[in-house]
Image (cartoon, rainbow, N blue to C red; front, side, top):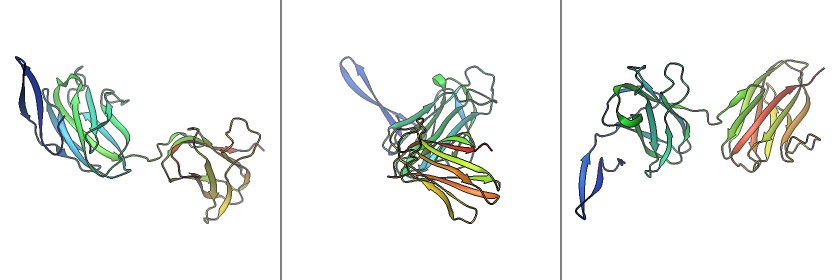
Length: 252
């Protein structure tokens, strides 16, 4: 695998019991700029390599998109990324894409160190020649999934998750933060449009047996003013994991 410190690869070949060292030069990787599409061409023989200057705890999504001969069966892009130590941290062949479902994407890659990350772009088997485009964009660090009133998100270490919701005067709400990782102690609170704390909870102490002992719930919260409210969740000890946030309007 090409390393950033030297742009050539060595191969050991056994010939009549003797190890022979052969050097193969490779083109210098192309440096990618954040949120900037970069067009390039694959010749059907060699992959393309790119470099991205990443930051610690940065979360990125890398998309490789074919821009020519989309109907060709061999036009099947693949993506790989290596960290600054030369360890592969992600690979992707296909991802759902209406235009070309064979395009590749590395989604929500969390970078653990500051430095240059090496990215390899190719087609499956490395045999297709054509035009492509690669782009790196920011990813949601919380990796939200689901509907607005019932979502699952990832809580990074020492992070505070915040979600803005619109409530109407007279609404009576129940808010629940449920640990899905089995290792978290969610702390839940809500602030009013003026920034004041309207309610908070650490351990729910309710009779709901679907919740863990350390899950959080704010019950029967009466909304007196229509406006934007902020719901916040953190782990009591700053640990990382997945949490389900449920926002329920109580029946009249």
